[in-house]
Length: 505
Image (tube, rainbow, N blue to C red):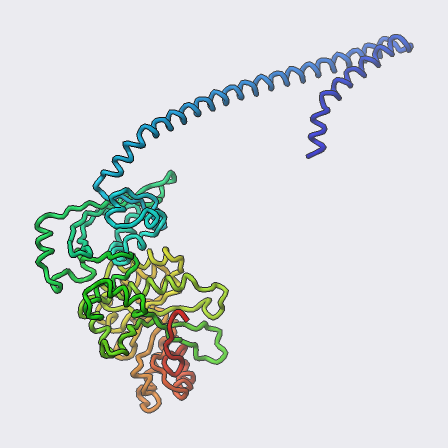
């Protein structure tokens, strides 16, 4: 490259020197030698050719210079034109900024721009004042943190539809901390980038509360409020938006307190925690990873506030299990997002999460799942959802539809409580699951009941024939572990393997 640059710089001088040398040779031949006319003519022709070549080169250089000058002049004119346009645009923006600011300040419609990752990129004054937040608590923050988990969970389907490019409109009721209830009209308008792909969506919220709504809200008793998960379910956005809908709805039944501030205090004290129990591979020298089942606990159960075993039945009674399942998924995803990827113990581990019957019927749960995994950057393959065998028997079509949508998020599936009731393996083969969790009542009796032992041998044999792995539940002692290993069961969990421990440890 350096040689070429040097050659281009000295090329004009070389050509000129060549012409001069040819002319000097011709003069020398005429005056100082006795060469014949043929040689003189030849040298003269060479000189003429050299002069013509040099003239052509000079002419070409002049043409190139003229063309470059014209291009430079055109670029200069274009730059001046663009500069003028930009100056005019800046002047127009400066003139319109006060009017735009006035519109932004007085517009009663709450407006926010949410990008494809769920972060807020713009909001107007009405949006900020409605939520009682500072600008730094909104701009750049995730929509879950801004609106709160309750609203985010209930609107997960609408958010997903907007990010898929659909215009969404719906109504909802909002209950404020002071007891006032508002009816809101919410619109999600997708925003498309230059490439035609959805880059986010505008969220528009209008207060359409009527006097009848206010009167109705003032006369309703707590038990007359719509149940959690319904279209018009009320939610409380008290202070911090990070409080979970499960705790919001469960306050009076679980803690026995009506004040939402007391519920926040219970959360801050660690009233709700996630535990995990080890699911270990049984074959000796197995290279299979260890897995974990996620357990949710209310610490106050052991302190006399509730009798043991009353937590889940009460949640089912009040229709709160879908909210609890979402609470678990969100916190597990958040916890998994902070795991060390180089930790070999958890590199390929699965986290099993039980799903309630009501959650399987919740058509918006798969949308919430996809948004949550995307928010925390956790692969769906890290989660395995447990579906009760009774649900698969009673509602195979609904369960299959739910499972298909959960699989679209990359998650795996397991059937829990298998063997407790009769179930067709053909149904499981068509349903596609990765694991069968054998009912603990069967496992508990295999050492003293040959019928139960024969049952798990048959289950394991058929499961292996269809490519499904087996997990024994309620494994209590080494004798049971040895028998399960002899049978060929793939995994085991229970107090004989490991007691539950806090997920954060």
